[in-house]
Length: 110
Image (cartoon, rainbow, N blue to C red):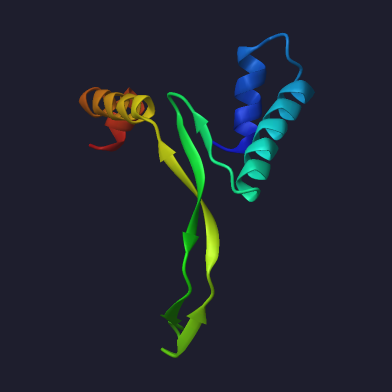
């Protein structure tokens, strides 16, 4: 799902929201998450998951083309850990889809 798909979904689920309002809501939420991570905060959305920042120490790597050793500096990267409810929902829904594939997908497998 892309950002524009998320905007479309929000606008279609909530008829009182204009497309512009839905776009603004999605942008506001994503900006808030990004800003909190930049400040080093952790974001937890109960039932969905948590976002945090992981620290990767400096290390030596290799240039795949030349095989030459390359120093890779330390960095901080965003990390998402799904919550228990999300993990269970994904597991249940994918198991159901494997048991009962949609007709279009089933016809392609023949």
